[in-house]
Structure formats: C-alpha cells, structure tokens
Length: 226
Image (cartoon, rainbow, N blue to C red):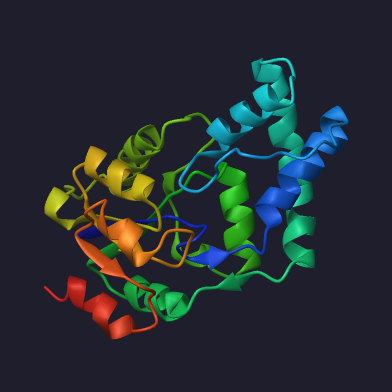
C-alpha cells in the first residue's frame, strides 16, 4: 500500500495570495496592526511558526492567547480572501489526484504547514478536498519535521489494518523543507518546482524524484507502477 502525503500551497495550488492577504487582514482586525510585514519567510514553513514570527515582528504579546486570536481571525477571513482572488490549481494536479484516488493500493494524505481548517478551506475552495481524509497540519508545530511525524501517526491511525512500508511512503512538496521533513520520517520524496524554488534549487536538496510540474501525469504515475 502506497501512502502519499501532499503539501498544498506551491504543490497542488496557488491561492492567489489569499494566505498572505488573510493574515494581514487578521492582524489588522484582531490587533489594529496595519504596518507592512517584511522579511518573514513563509515557503515551506508552518502557520504556527509564521504566526509566532509575526507576533514578535509587530511587538505583540507572545502568548498562546495572542496566537489563538490571530488564528481564529485568520480562519474567519480566509474564505473571503480565497473567493476574491484569482487562485489556480497547478497543471496535471486534478487528473493526478483523480487517478491516484481510483487505485486500491494508494492512500492520499496531507503534510502541510497550513492550520488544519485553513488547509480544508483551501482544498474545498478548489474542489480537491474529496481526495484526502487525514494528514499533518501546522496548528501546533513550528518545525515541519514534527508535522511530518504527525502526518505519519495520522496515516497509521487512519489505516490501522495496514502496515506502513517506508519504501511505499511518499512526501510530495515544492520546497527543500518538504524534502527534509520527508527524510525525517523515512519517506521517499518527490519535489515539484511549481512554488518559489527552481528546479536547480530543489535539486540541491536531493529529492528522489524531481519535476518541473505535474502536467505529464503519466510520467508521475509511473512512479507507482509496481
């Protein structure tokens, strides 16, 4: 049985900036912060870690209650941000997910830095949620490796009758952080250059397989031909 764990942003879809716009609106609505946020990286990171850095950057009280307020406000405004922006699903992704979902020897999960509810909001908006039923999310962990471990535990719980073979455990993402967290759980890793990182940049992180995009669906599916 193949367990395939997908990242979301930069791998399956581009939200059109809904995440960035949503967090900026959340800062304003929850804390009155209108100053620009510069220099805080987001690619390959978790919403928990990004939220922590934003709170520090804007001099807000560093507490669980502050983060909870930011998270709650962000989740309220994200659907509107998704609706008003021109996001897209990357080439080949819809067909790839349909084809994999049809197979009895494949189970699809998520390994994403998004908050759990933000992940499902994005997937529902783009009509992809039906392909997934478990995963690891960015609610509690700043370290993406910990999210990978959570995803592996979720896979084991969701498919309790099946032994997870690490040779058939896969992580698919668009950043070096996706490659690293896949290695942290002993997975084989597929990197795709549809996010912020180029083919050359991703190659240095040494994924098992590397694609410019998933437009050639048959080439991607050939990895699971056994």
